[in-house]
Image 1 (spheres, rainbow, N blue to C red):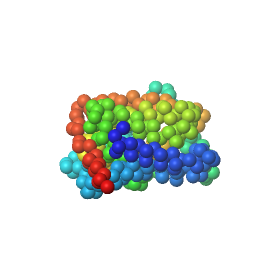
Image 2 (cartoon, rainbow, N blue to C red):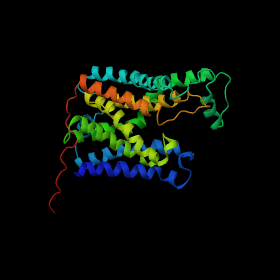
Image 3 (cartoon, rainbow, N blue to C red):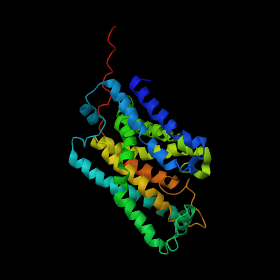
Image 4 (spheres, rainbow, N blue to C red):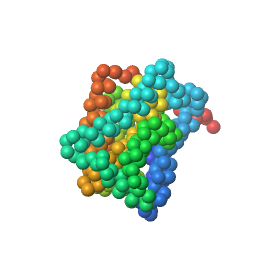
Length: 304
């Protein structure tokens, strides 16, 4: 393994396990520290990028451009794809829920919103009389503000996975292979949480393996946004939108027949099919150009 890639992997993975260690020592996903530590984890890929930059001694302005922190050469295209990501990801999320209901994998409760009620009660929160209004407000806030509220921690991930790692893998692999490999590494990085059952409680530690599949497929879309624009910002918006919209979308289900998270929704099997179709269409009808990898030569040590 080349030195820059080794530095990145050691920092991103090592620090993510360090951040999640308190969850393994006490409480698991039910720990009151869960949200804060999971957010802290999201910055570890960015630390990996900074580690590679530190040994490269490249000017930071050049490094920022190479790793996608700018808006790219075609700013109008970047702006258009930011908007497309902002609106398109929620569309995929709700389409996955709708298809899951259409094929009988989930029962929606749009009258009583019983699953939302159960979620509020589980958190010890007061349940308002008009749950429909609450559900609508949750979704509207997630749609409008989610990408903005999530932007900083999500950038911590995207700068690492799509900003630096993806172009690095492209330098030695084909486009599809690099997209899938970067997604697999991204999915594996979640192991400190997914081994505890994160996202798929019914799978237990097998959630770690299952989530890699989702990350590979969604990673194709995120990678396409990054490579199509030369910027990480469309991927940041897409990732932030997913994190905001997916949870309230699943709460539209029926508490009497709780949804099987392995099968339904954007992170379930139905979502995998949608993401695979979307990714294949993008790669077929809008081919990508190969960017310059963000790995300036590491200077040789001076003789003593």
